[in-house]
Each structure stands twice: as structure tokens, then as C-alpha cells.
Length: 458
Image (tube, rainbow, N blue to C red; front, side, top):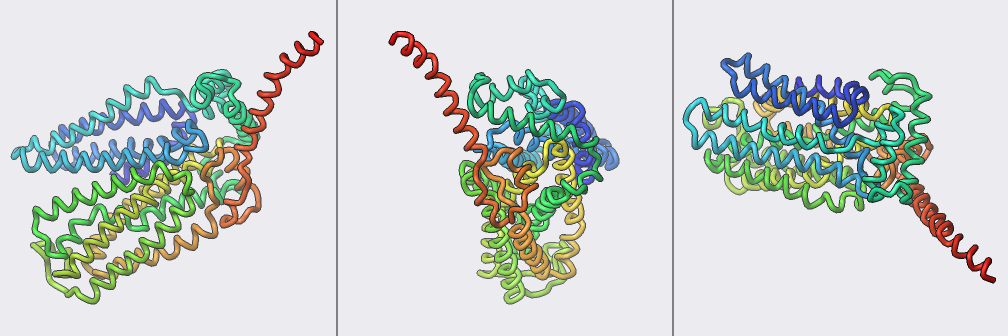
């Protein structure tokens, strides 16, 4: 699926720019349903793999373009929590499918067990496809296609309760018009254009934040938690229950942080997340190196050559749970939010698509790295991820400007300025100032008729 997701993410920007954010997601929903049907009806391994690749194409499109769509719809002041809902929804999906799969494996003792699990996947795809028929198109995409009236009406619907003259609508409308004007001056965007003089810094931020999200080790902790529990000599049923617990922790922590994610800011979440996860990786490596011992295999699994018993084993499990919680609080939502914010309008769909492709290609690569790493270098695997966390901490501090509570167009201007990333939080909130200016102008204009009538009476 990761390979299909990589291909889908690369193609997503071109599809989204041509037919719109909403329709591209509708197409992806239909592709997902098709993939689920193929998997459900699989007669052999090749048949199943084909279904997984097709579903992966859909995941590549949705993982990149949902955050673009939400970022272009959401007001600047709450954009983080709106885009972060995507990550929270993913976590709900992970937990629900885990429980469905567990239920099928325990309650259905026939080939129908896997067919039910694969078939259930089509249900959310169908719900999304129907719901999208009632959703508005991105006002920024509409403006880029010179559908000005529709764009303004959508902005008014989203930010002004249908009032075109609402101060926030007027300010955002002016910024959208300016962004479209600048976009017109650019040539048609290819993937290579994302490395151009004006855009390469944003591309590096967008792609690297997605790559770092993988190299942080969050998905590794989620996928290979069974290995960790087996190394700690946990019995089979306990391993399954413990896996469900980590998915609940993941879901709860992301849900807790979403209401505050715009107030906290992107940089603080990313920096604190990488620092704490770095410490946890080194702690797990230290505990395993000190108290563990080599073995030939564990419960018949020859990939596992290291075991750690007793209290130290429970310590490793506790660190793993804490790691999942920190990941859910920080990098899991923040990386997707940040990637959706850094690109200008003309480059946004393709830029976020390339960023998501970076995420998926490293997801694919880690799937082939982690199991052999546990076999050959054992606890030193955690040292490698700890080093990744160390490097990303410095990279984020020196290269990632703050984007929280700024309009997408204001972020665009900030990247063009010479403000240092670690000083970017000091930049004035121009969007808020413009809204206040429009409010004051509205008050003055509303008072003018009263003043003129008073003058006539005198």
C-alpha cells in the first residue's frame, strides 16, 4: 500500500489543480471503494496485492489533498485544529480497523474473516463520497480558475455567515486576489519548479517535516509494538490487548491537543516532540543494552534476537506507551498541518503532494529496515532513531518559521522575507490588523448617514 500511496501522492497535485480539491477527493473515494472490493474478492496473493496498490493510490491522494482542502477552507485562527482533524480521523480509522480485524479473527473461523475486514473498508469511502457532494469547493482554487463570484460566496459562507462585507471575509478576499495575481505571473508548475529560487525553502520544509515524521519513529513504534512486547516476554493475548491500548493512547492524546494546537504553535510542538522522543529512544536503548540478553528466537520468531525480562521489560513497555502519547500530541498532527501551510497557492497542491510522497516512500523504506534491524543490530535500532530525533531538532529550530494563526498568504510573505526562523513568532499579525482596520472602517461608514441627517436638521 505504501508504494501505491507514494504514486498517488505524486499524482495528487496535478489532479487537484485540474479538477479541484473536492472532486479530486471524490475520485479518490471511488478508487478506495474499488480497491476494497478487489481485496474483499481476492482469490490469490497477486489479486490481493493489486487491491492494496489501488487502495494505496487513493490514500496518496487523500493524505495530501485533504489537508490542502482543509487549510484553504479554514480561518487562520483555527486552521491548525481543523487540519489536525485529518490526523485524528486517521487514528480513529486505525483503532476501528484493528478492533474489526481482531473481532473477525476471533469470531469468524473461515475465509470470510479477512473478506469481512477488507470489505468494511469500503463503508467510510462511500460515506465520504456522498458527503463530498454537499461540501463547498476551495475558495482559493475557485479564484485560481477566475470563478470570482463563487470564490467570494464560499468565503462569505465559511467566514462571514453569508455576509460578503464581513471584515474577515473582505481581508481574506483581498489576500486571495493578491495570491492569484502572483500565481498568474508564474509558469505552469511542475515538480521540478518546486525547487525553483522562490520556492525551494518551502519545499524543503514541507518535504522534510513529512520525512522527519517517519524518522521520528512514531509509525515504527505503532507497527512493531508486538515485537517490543514479545521481547519483554508478554503472552500472546496480552500482546493483542496491549496493542489496542497504544491505539487508544494515540487517539486520546491527539484529541486532547487539537483545541490548543493553534495557541501553542507549530515550532513548540515539533521541537518538544523531537526532544522528548529523542530522550525516550536513548532510554529504551540504554535499558535494553543494560538489562537485556541475546537469544536465538522468541516464540518461534527468528527476527527477534534480544529479550528483556521483569521490571526492565515493563520499563521498555512504559517508555513505548509514553512515546506513542508524545507522538500523538506533537508530530502526528503537526507535521501534516505544517506541510499544508508552507506552500504558495500556485504550488500548494503539488507541493503537499510531494511532501506526502516523501512521507510514504520513507514509510515504505522503514518497513524493510526495522525488522532486519531488530534482528541484526537489536537495541542499537533505537540509537539510530534517537540520532534522527537529534538532527531534526536542530533542523526545525533553525529552518522552520512559525505558521500558526497566520493567513496562508501572510505565511507566503513571511517566507519571502529575511526573518530568521527562530524569530518568526515576533512578526506582527498583519491579518488581524487588517481585520481590525476593516471593522473600524465599517463602523465609520455606518455612522456617516446619522451624521449627515443630524447636519440637515441643524
